[in-house]
Length: 243
Image (cartoon, rainbow, N blue to C red; front, side):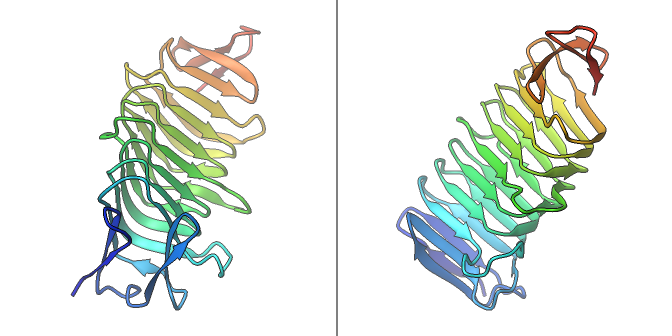
């Protein structure tokens, strides 16, 4: 039978299923909020997280057990109240995350085969993959559906097999590492800024639906869309890139 852990009145409700990996969950107070982890160090499987009210700070993972461990798998993370901050200290797989205005979702490790949705947001949301001490990809097989507000999506490491759908707004999308088999789908309402690493290797990267309202940076160089998947350096029109 599922259990419910109440972090605080008006805070997070956590439904703990009877799947393997949810029998040793510990919830403790942490500076400025709470932390949640499995006491035996195993992966939390089938976690259901619902934010009933905004403004809470939650860590998933045990800070006393460093390393890029798989913290959660097959989880539903519903940060729909706004102004919440959720940090996953390790990696995640099979996550469905829904976010509302002002929420921040931070990964210290990797994410794979997960879906992220900010389409119901009425204010800026932030999704960040730190990429610190990560040798491989930080995002693999993930899909991001960004809403019409000014969202921020930052990849601190390599990205592979990832799809980003932008419904509009002044979004900021940054890649700090290599990009492989990844696409960004912009809508006519998008006014997005996309930043690529100057030294990153790019293979199979596509930006669809761009127009004159969108801006591309490669390192410190600014490019504007010319049509036919072509971007031109504003300081040197002979310097063009096709994505």
